[in-house]
Picture 1: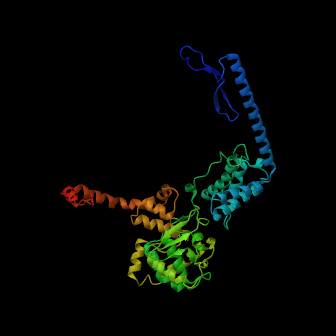
Picture 2: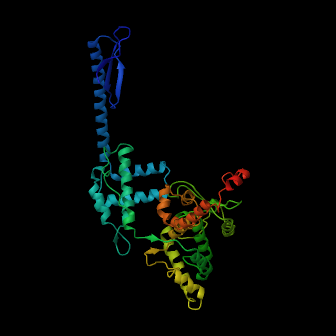
Picture 3: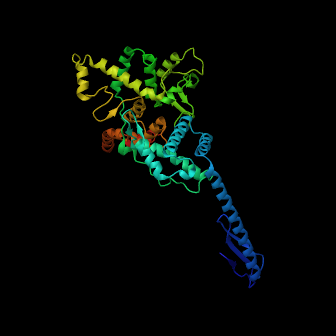
Length: 420
């Protein structure tokens, strides 16, 4: 940076040019409009002085802004952050959960102002948290979610609105949830679902919900992969049951990814739902199910009832004995591998059945509404392995010429020539 001249043109000396860093740190090149070097140096010095003044002014203003925000209680910053999440279109479920987690961490850690937020305090606070009746420490997955909540807040403080000069939690790492997974869900077997369909009507009402309605809820969960909270939110107006492609729609303020979910269902299920909501107003709830925190208990209770009923006649039924020889934990809520059944397992069943049916991975990702196909493969990838032998057999047939591929469906003659 400094003074320079462009190459002489025809032996003539050109004007001097100057180069300097402005108040934003950007390099500026300009013409001094003079061929006299001493005058050019004076012009450059003047421009540099103005840039320095602006830099100093910005620095002072920034420091004043940080000082102003530092005096504000954390709750005021949190309210601004929540407003920002709403303007970004995040779902209310997500916003409420994040706000609750940030408030609890701040309260337990004793954070009153932004200067109180420290990485070590956040780590120690989350590590001390307990859950369940036996007051167990948070699992790695749960700690990961809580850390994500508070890190999202401090990242916003740093980037949006410039309330902090630097993110105090930038070095805080999220634990790997797969290393300490306590709740492992399994998918229902098709045979288990058929038994549930046949025997659950004997159970009668539970939590004020008739057995027929509970079956409808479970079937909808398996077909669509909808979560308990999403099904709970459904109103009659969100059911589009006419035509050959019926769908149910969950609005973006309910879904996890803050996007409207349009989930297709079979015409058979659409007929059942149409009958179920007949005579109701568009804004009425489709199901009288409990809130999502009670649905796991409800489903486990139903499975346990069905299991007890089904096993009553095992001794006299050779078919059931054959099933138990292959699947000794048939209809068990908890198995020996530590896997369990709860309401969310119905969503897992949706993805698992699609994988086992040979549905393309991207289609499964779309149905399950996974943001990244990697999540689909991580969750259901082991099920695709069961198709490897079938794929190998198909390849073997192709190599031998016993099977064929319609390379040009619109050109049967060309296909015939290729096959021959």
